[in-house]
Length: 202
Image (cartoon, rainbow, N blue to C red; front, side, top):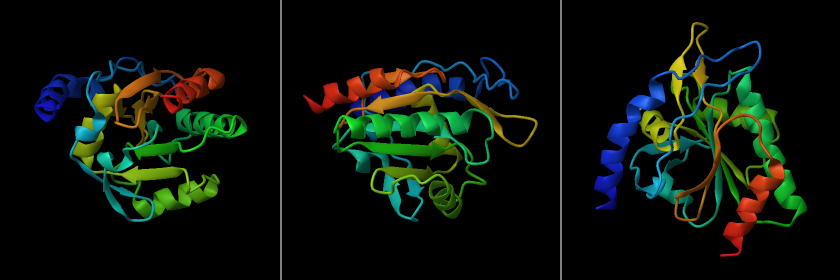
């Protein structure tokens, strides 16, 4: 029943992931406005398969069991994506400073054509992303579209071969439900870590 609910909800949301709300200003790093994320259902009911940077095939439900900080971006982006990753690293470092452990960080690529597992592996290595906590994922166009719709991430191809897209960073609980989301680039790191701490105390 929950799978059926999720499918129906995604059918209503999916158009929003690719219809632009506001064009990405490449000069000033203004992201597209995020859509409405799915609420009340686990993202782990999505059945698409992804491949991580080590070539391992997974489904979202394989992330079950601990909080996950999630974002959608792409490796060739020179605008908002580096800030998204920097914000996630800042969350990681702040959580470590507070001795908050057992958190995953998941980077889901919007660019199915370019961001192969090999490219994602190189990107993670270039940025020193800890493989014990970070996973970067490649999926086909449908997998990207369905996850973007569930997260409220809007995106579209731009005229430079990249993407205009929302800058949302989302916190999932151990069962894959959205418990917190910051839908723009202005992130309060302490607030985000406090939300993670709240999950760890439950």
